[in-house]
Length: 338
Image (tube, rainbow, N blue to C red):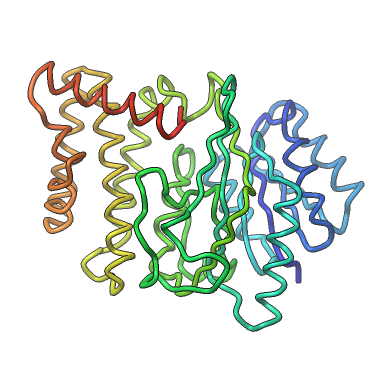
């Protein structure tokens, strides 16, 4: 059995996928790389097969009809044989030294009989044109270099969300918890890092900059204009997250609070983009989303609405909309997204 399966979803990725794969290959035979060709119309499949021919013990290639990023992740997970599972988007890459550090630590933990359900490492915003690279670490939020539980986590700053970039899940946990991402839907990475959390019992955090998150292409799904145009998909993902758990039943108070924080962020992001779009239809969709949350879980609705971000999305008139937009622009500069 391989130590780590790295799934690389690819759609028309010929121009940049080599860097992602080359950095993973430095993990050697400890890694299984599953390249999922999601109905590409360029040379993605040819490049993938080239790697499979050169590294038959490491690289697997699966081609499928286009199903979107989530379906490509589903395919990677369904075919994963590694003890652990990580997703690497085809335009991103990993730091080679950090990858070796992580693999060595995982082997050490397994040998000691203490392998965690969720292994976390830092990620770096590789933003086009940025002179300084923003590193997202979990200092002061998570214990370092030891196994811990949710009851031992500390305070998460607004920038310290657990994202797909930072996670390495135990493969069996993902399969057992029934996680299945929707087809033809963007922003499903939020489901990937939210729905499995209550099934995670043990964690490990290593303060190394493993994942390099490339950001800045005009066609990227996190580009602001693109996000506004795809707001219905963001709303769909947020509703799925609301439905996935009754947070009143989460036993760990600290995990429950973190999940409320994350869901609050999703609610606010949806609200802000609907406000920025500005049409009567978008304002109606915003109200429908909050009503949906209230209908599903009134307790959770009250918790999120009581937060300052939750209250800000309902300030009246043009002044209220401007406050929301200004707050979003400040947050974007601080945290480096978009």
